[in-house]
Length: 351
Image (cartoon, rainbow, N blue to C red; front, side, top):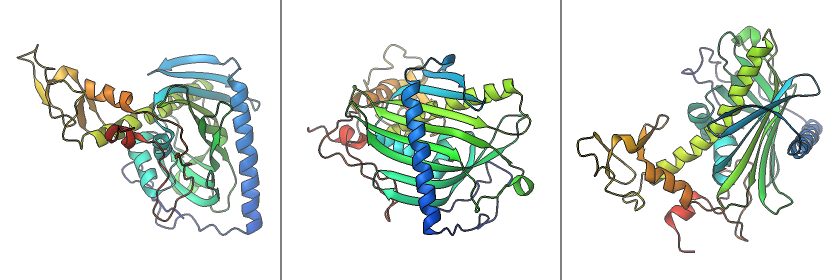
């Protein structure tokens, strides 16, 4: 079972080790969790298929992320964000699944800026394609909204859609769990309620491209004005999807920087600006004008625009008989089947 302490750099509320009691549940209780998770997950996917043909109120378009909202049946405001990105399912899985301690730490430090911490309280390996877990996570908010925490029943599953393309979906719904008591008195966290939330990643007709749909129907509880809630959820829906794209790109750049040569970067980038400041590009070794370089703040790594752009162009995601399903449960070696991932196409173009 995964154990994970709150990061003291992110919060002033670090619980001691073993803060959450160990979950001891019977076989019948575990079967109930699986049945409830499957029911909620199926309903989440059904709503997604219906929403593809339903008009939503467009709120904003931020960094190519389309954010919409509508009223849900319980009168809360449900938000959806959507974006098409250059990535493989394996890459998004690594960024979002959060099934290992390393993945959870990486998410908190690099991907989900508004997450304080997360911990798996109980997990069930249903099959190679499906994973169920009870998860706790804490979430920070801008003033005047205080920190919130949630206890959710989470399902991760890989399927094949009607077009024969792979789809990976993650859904969450709040659940009462005896090993996840209310933490308002001990840590000052207000327990929120997730009516329904989740991410759906689907391969598109363009190789190496995914369409991401993120849904969040969340009741923050407490005294939160509706206009404040709307701004907060709109920002969260947009930043979550955008951060996935950014993190995938950063991980690709990190791998590319280990190469001794990168032929896609022209060595004459600074030829027309002899007096302009120069910067060394680690991914290709060129000295480029500062104005043509991108600096990723999370990784403190500089990369030139041609190298950055070429990474997305080089990646191809093809379905083949050799593709393996995503490993939705942690193995003893914490590995997963990669299929046709980024490294295959950057370093091995023989096929």
